Image 1 (cartoon, rainbow, N blue to C red):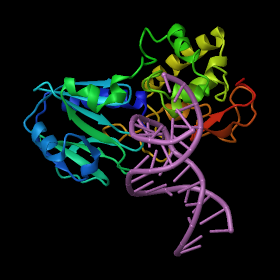
Image 2 (image 1 turned 180 degrees about the vertical axis):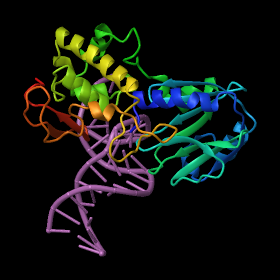
Image 3 (image 1 turned 120 degrees about the vertical axis):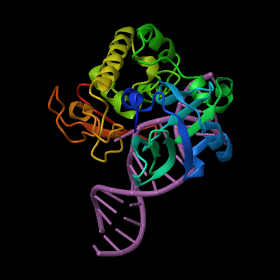
Length: 276
DNA sequence: CTTGTGTCCTGTAGGC
DNA sequence: TGCCTACAGGACACAA
């Protein structure tokens, strides 16, 4: 679920609730969501540590602690974070980080695919290889057509698949790749290396704009509400989606139906008329 | 190195 | 109503 705009919104909204707070107690209800180290060390390593800064890289949320370790959280498909009082017990709670002000940061993950890690900076390359190999983010200044073209020109896989590659477009997932391809008027089935320079320029701009708008509108909360802000409210980018999960609806540009296909085992939505 | 496929896990929607 | 299947926004291991 959460892609860059959702994780960034969570980072912005959760920072004032967590900065300067000390973790007093960690309860792990579901051991397999602790990716590293083993659960006992994970719990002991967090006790009495203060959260001093909160960052993000791609879809990873990074909580920097007072002893220079980093609590890293990846929400995968269905994870949430909530900051709630000690008494509340939400469904699908997997890890609870009790704080020194009688609130708790709670990692909620129905599918239990998300992971939490406690690492030193030196451990990141061996423990979180994906984080280490991550490419540029579309919101970065130096994510531009030159950068994108340097990857696309040597990939013959479908452009949609390449956009989902975190080594190329860090933080981009299924929603924002479909929306950016629509905005750029590019068919998701096109081989990446078939895009000409003009098309790569369009796609680069479309990715940047789509991801920035996702952040501006606080992320995408679909009807299943798998993504919510830390206070339980919804994002608003779903109101602006042009093609994602719009199968059968009219294309906003040409009026013909949006179609759904499977690309690389993922649902893909696009307009077969407008996207060449 | 690249590419496609399967797997992790659980809940839900839709067909019959 | 109940059963069965397909599918869900991600990432990675693995084989070819």
